[in-house]
Length: 482
Image (cartoon, rainbow, N blue to C red; front, side):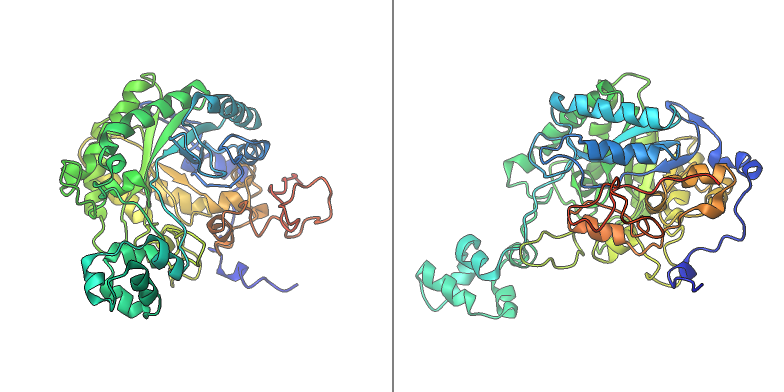
């Protein structure tokens, strides 16, 4: 039988641990540090499956998605990035109103039942600014472009309508010379708000509005029976943008490291004050933005120490995933922050370079953890990125590079993989190819699935829930012990 070429690129595993070996592994040992208590150090980080209702409520498909992961009994699962504002955001979960609590309670109950009470459920709380789809070039010029003096001076006419018609006939190179940089970006990439747009009242007042929004969202999560919250301070979104070196706000919430970390700390403290004393509150942030002029590991270690001092119960370290270097979207589509070099580092594939995706981001977590331990802080550090082998995870833990090892894409490929390894059946793990098939679906806002779910399984079974086009199954095949 021929070997799939993708399988040749998998991280080699000389042998899978026996059940006895697995029982002795640190990865499957408990963690009990401060307010964070886990049965094992296995962790499934947040992934957006695009299964919520159009109103952002928990659907049956959402419950099925998380319950399926819970069957593998990881130490923790983090619910997808969930919006803290009560505003339309498509089929993404929201938590900006009390009406979302009953659905989230159903979800928490389902995870608890599916895992036999072994898996802790956290929810990732996110705020994001406005981003619009890339417009048709002429439509932007004729309807949305602001005509400033530079454009008027270059135009052959003083009439606004004639100026716009003339601009439509110019090459993009000429328009780039004439337009302010943000206007040209809005035409070629789509309009995107930034935390530095302090001329917009809602953005100028973010330091006043966000702490309460995050705090109330956390209180709803606690009321819903969710075990803890993870504040989303990573990637392309509001809180990460405050932490970025590109944050040049001069109102005390930008420019310097102290200024940039000020609002994230105020949010953390507001959340900590709003929930019960024993309720875990952690956060996910970047060890490196991987963009020109962005924050790096030196910034991250500074931020980590401040977060630990402020009472964060865990720090989950990620990398990249920024709008600043994203690929130009097609007309009618919005920019996606995982399409450029920083995005490729965030979710690396087997083709990224000779090293590939495996443990690629671990050194960031290791450096941050070392800084905290030197300062006498025991805050648990979570690492992720290309984790697909129990020995890989064990080496990370035994060498002190992290306290918890997370796996997203491998867990998506096989939600049972933790349990298979613990049962000494690791050879039956359905391994991730790290091609980012799933990420491609996310980019198109389609229900996220895995290319491996239909492989070697009955495609004709009528009981299998499938995508709208009928071509993809919506849940992973179940594991049957031999």
